[in-house]
Length: 231
Image 1 (cartoon, rainbow, N blue to C red):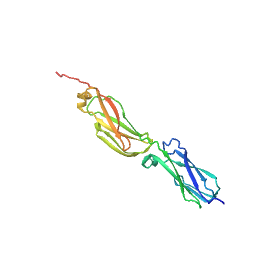
Image 2 (image 1 turned 90 degrees about the vertical axis):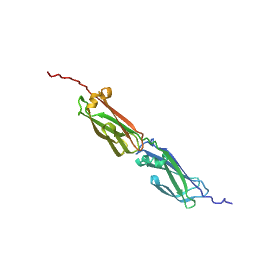
Image 3 (image 1 turned 30 degrees about the vertical axis):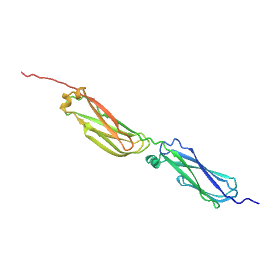
């Protein structure tokens, strides 16, 4: 006697390549294999992979036969900004069924290389002799997103100049330039810049995703004590 019908469908899914999964635009390639592992022909098979928009119908699949698919997903900036939904990876599930079998699923995940990084520099826009109260020192501050995650709530502060500014967001590779000014006081001149002949200034920048980073610049000052005697 013939054995009883035992329709069975299997699906497997693996990651073939991910280009490093370290920046938006990287392409993840998946390999999917659909196989008839039962003892009867399967009909009206449907396979769906919502993440990659794969949807295929197969009329029949003979006993022991398999069919392979390749599908791709392009990583988005949102994937990195949300850290893959919070767990650091992009998960992808494919489903398959037939007229003779229940739905079967297979999943594969790609770990994201999320690297938030904030670069901060500070320099004096035009170095020149500073030798009297009232002279101005003009500073240029530049914050740059050198990582692969959008930075938010970037706060830049410069206590010496009473400067504080918040940048709502900064996309990867983007930068923003800020300026601030300090006016020399007579105390700066009399104290020789605190004793070392310089006005030293340190600013700080941080964001929701990164620790605080500092940037400093110094300006030499010139004391010119002179006593005039009129007779």
